Length: 107
Length: 123
Image 1 (cartoon, rainbow over the protein chains, first blue to last red):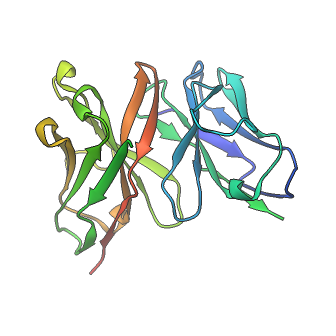
Image 2: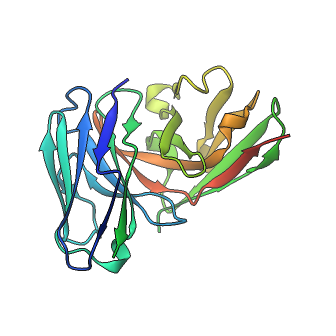
């Protein structure tokens, strides 16, 4: 199985800050990498698919990049509603695996 | 509105069985692979299993942790997905989400997700 890691595991930032989360795969997943946002007490929601494509309705302050084994999710200007845990997930090979998550808090 | 709604969770003793249901609205599940993903309390997301569509003969895949104990099935006429769980263990305690696979082969993602249903395995 492909192992996914994320860093940091948690972060605290102020409203308006630029936030970057990193995801690494144990082997190349091409660009078959997705990002999800899970707000407290809610189901996950897809933010980014195929490494860099913004899901419809997702604010443009979210962006992502990467290919192969290294990927990043960036929030250009953190907002209070961005309080959540963010997960990366590879869909390159079965079983699809998720990273352990990055919890984003607002200072 | 595209929506998934799960039901059937609850408290069950170790070794027991439970069946979860998921009803889709706003789209037809006919053409889609449908999956179950779970989340243990305070933990991350774990893929559980999937059923492919009719074109792919409704074949199924499972995580190693649930293989031979869980069965994913679907009824396209009812726009519904099911998860039959047998020989439940305490480590199966989790919120179970149903979700739709979207995209082309290799570049798939999950959207939407249901609200989840909690399964607690405890004596």
